[in-house]
Image (spheres, rainbow, N blue to C red):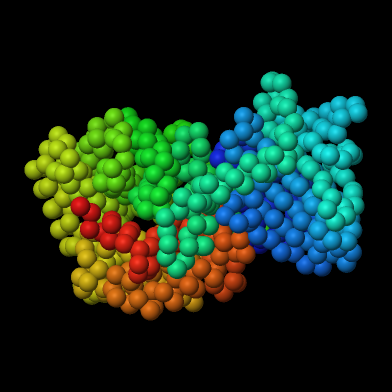
Length: 605
């Protein structure tokens, strides 16, 4: 058990997944986070938010000199190489997609010499709160851990000892030898699934990911980080519905020891357009179409009931509560399950949905039967409520305000719906929509811009800056060369950048209902790259982009934020928003790539 306050860094983890859920594997060989059977299910391994006693599975040598790890080529198969005083061994971790059951498979392979290993398996259901009943059938190398609706079956090619609440094994492995472990989830009221053939599953998983990664159309200078980001995005797609979770985790802190800890295992609407374009531009049309279809189903219904986020299947009730028995990552509490921001009003999501649906049509995706009816209802609604305050893109828990970015995105909702009606002959009250679009634009320019500061500001009547203002040229509200946009970019560069990275806003002077303190928001830093490129400051843009790439961990993953002074990643992980923004910037900067997301969105046909 690790000492309090000595949690592995967030970037010490890698992700594996099967399209239904995902596990986080530490450099030490410990799996410290896994929710089964879905991304948003209660965790059976939750040590990342506490201690080993809250659920973990360690497979590691008894003594280690050095550790190296990588994904096997363009796959999601994780390979960790342990160098020890007596030899070298390889740990292979993966989750095979597409099987009728969900499995976590681990293979220990001897490379040279002879290495002594130990396996320590401690499962706890419901985020570490429930000790399961364990059944070990006689003369069988397996055990069953059961609690309520869940059963985990652990099988191995060697005998596993069960002592108290810990299943452990010690073994030696020589060059060319292999030991297999298979952990399978199933409903406790159903028959135990058959054992999986681990070598065959490894071969099939490798083929699956190579086929998938081989479809990538990006040929720019940053193919490796782009492809790894696309694969991370794929790992966060809930295959049964096409929904994309914002991250695989909950409550990894935005400030160590702080309270800005949120559950990100849900599907946000605000990433919709950039996510759609990332998939479409890279050639992943099937995933883009399923994401578009998920959007339409999720927001279907009366527009005033539209939410900013939904569950993986489009669920609306995401009640927030606190797991008070968990000490939190490095003491960062509370640990939150669910997300109360689902009940907030955020006007920007209407623009995101309209923009995504419009770009789907432009790209030629087969029409969803109800898409226009949904879009028209949402547009009529935002045309009626755009003058009201909201909680804004950052989901502040302070008082609602007239956030500039929210008004800009309300304009986007009208703009994209008008263009869709004009281009595709959809029935719509065009004259009314055009008038509302004109009024919103004039209102933002009059009230969201500070002549004194020479820049747009966070909210009407405020002097605060906000990195969401970097989206103004990216969504086509004003061109990048407009003096007001240029002044905004320059002001953000002066006041919100810390060691080169962009913060969302000043948490010590913005009323967001929370104590101050957080890292630099990585997506905002990529948006700054895009603005530099649009302004012709290409050398600066490329330099910052390369710096952002250097912040990825050793297997190419990014969290939500980064603390440049402590030199570590912060927030939920891996973060879809960060990787989508990386993909967009790579396209925007690649001279030979004809597709430029900033121009795609900013000059919407």
